[in-house]
Length: 217
Image 1 (cartoon, rainbow, N blue to C red):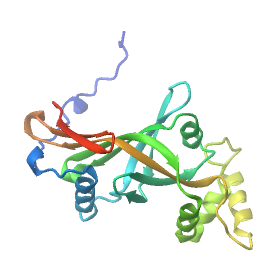
Image 2 (cartoon, one colour):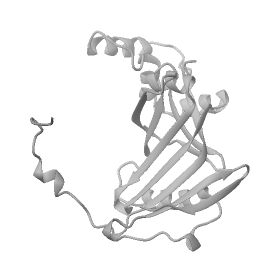
Image 3 (cartoon, rainbow, N blue to C red):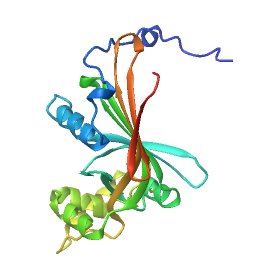
């Protein structure tokens, strides 16, 4: 077994020493959203290209998982995290079948991760309309044109669909595109530390209050 496995010695030797900061319970706020906003602001001020990039993992009705990168577009304090997508895409279908999701932010410059678990809810249509109209026209046309996650014949087919959308006299949000909010019930803050003794502080929703505890690395 594994007889043909490529020997990648360069992978086994890839590691970093994490020494940027530490995370102590006495220095964390009552609300995880306060800490998230602090960390997010620090990531935005760094050289990270897209601090709002996050992995969102979903699963279909048979619990088959999938994950992809999306962009965080808003934060509703004490509730959750907003992103937008095509409702008929693979993730849209999975979110309709199974609203349980997980999010991951990775900010390597600060040696930090944030893991979020929760359930998705569709965003109010008015908010989806407002955000859609705030996007660059090209992005609006792309959302209208693309049958996201569906098989297409070739790239030319996609370009033809974009050209058709470009001929519309009025651009409005398509009904199969809009926002979701991930209503968080568990948020873990991970701070890299030397010797792999990383700090992991978890906030877990207990009715209306947040319970806070530490996990071993």
